[in-house]
Amino acid sequence: MDQTTQIIQSINSLLWGMYGLIPLLVGTGLYFTFKLRFVQIKRFVMAVKHVFGGITLFGRKADKDGMSSFQSLATAISAQVGTGNLAGVATAIAMGGPGAIFWMWIAAFFGMATIFSEAVLAQLYRTRDAHGHLTGGPAYYISQGLGSKTLAAFFSVAIIIALGFVGNMVQANSIAGAFYTAFNVPTWVTGIFTFIIAGFIFIGGIRRIASFAEKMVPIMALIYVIGSLTIIFTNLEGVMHALEMIFVGAFDPMAATGGVIGAGIKEAIRYGVARGLFSNEAGMGSTPHAHAVARVKHPAEQGLAAIIGLFIDTFIVVNMTAFVILCTGALDGTTTGIALTQKAFTLGLGTIGNGFVAVCLLFFAFTTIVGWYFFAEQNVKYLVGVRYVSIYRVLVLAFIMAGSFLHVTLVWELADLFNGLMAIPNIIALIGLSKVVGRALEDYEKKFLAGETPEFGELAPVPADIPRYNGVPAQDPALEPKPQHHRRLGGLRNRFRRRPHNAQENDA
Image (cartoon, rainbow, N blue to C red; front, side, top):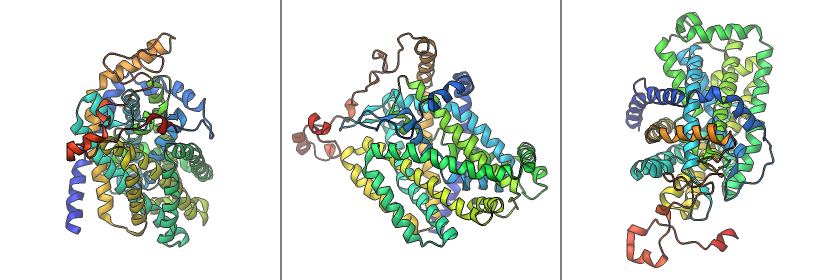
């Protein structure tokens, strides 16, 4: 097992190194930033109005026609804001110095253009499953837009393993470990609690997932921000020093910490960008699954919502953790990960700090479990159909329970590996379909905002080159089930095809 772990660690060091996904993901963001004419700056105010103008904790219930734009955004944020915002930020600072935060900001800024593109493509190439429910994500725009079912299948398998199974196992492990450390709660107790609540939400389907996300995400973010600002405001004299450490450390980590962190600029960039990408998930191909089912009038509107999701993740939540660590002087050169975050909050809030971090970690990790479950579920539908979703659901719950008891380094390494693997086909599709994204944005700005009939969206006629998008997409013909009697003749060829459905039964 140790040898296997070492092999995967070596692969991850290359995959997530300075010559792997880091320049690829940042380069993609840089490309889309210029191609879309700095949409993350130009349309930022409009994006804020779109998201917060209709914010509500009790929106219209999600149904077969999808979620509201805010519910979709909340579901996306539920996955983005996770343990990486607590432990990942601390690791970046401990290993790369305070300057790593600067490079997190850079990665996030360019990542806004990437995540805009993902959301737009997810809207354009969404479809309906065998039960008539909206579904979508990278597998759909890879297969329909890029025309590669092989890459789409590879992506689906990778994300099911990365998020649905291994990733959720890691999140459950983080919850159990934090509650054992803070409150001495046995891991099996935390495991059973997580299992029951997660199962209750999963069984409720898209309606319960959307309802959970729209209520829990704003509440958990507000609680964490209030706790963090309490510490920052009581250490205002350290804010300017923290900013100085971040900007100086971005180019001279040794000078920023007085040698406490023995890192160079290469480490600052590597850990800052890598942890930042892990946190905001831009280009990874996860959040498009939530944006695909949003009810919006134009695809670009959900692209703007996606920009705000990344902004909240990095420029608000990540910065809260970073400034608490730097303002309290918790950085000592030895403590790292969640232990460093707990130390900082204990210095800032006293004895309740450790428990506060544990409770926040519960919220962050659990909402990530729900979001990741939903994302991987769309790919189960893509690969084998809706009939097998119940089996997938049971397997995810089993992995969640197992993750609460186990603490295996190999599991964490596998999560990193498959996260990286699923990003590769998604990036290929983003670059390959970049003209479509540019055309959609131009259509939004020149026609939709001007009150003219747009080419895309619910007000548009069906475009010739993207026949599946007309506001209420039809089911992908490639996913249509074969008549039941064909299954006997087709053998294994038709084994995983969905059964025909009766419209009246489904509506009931």
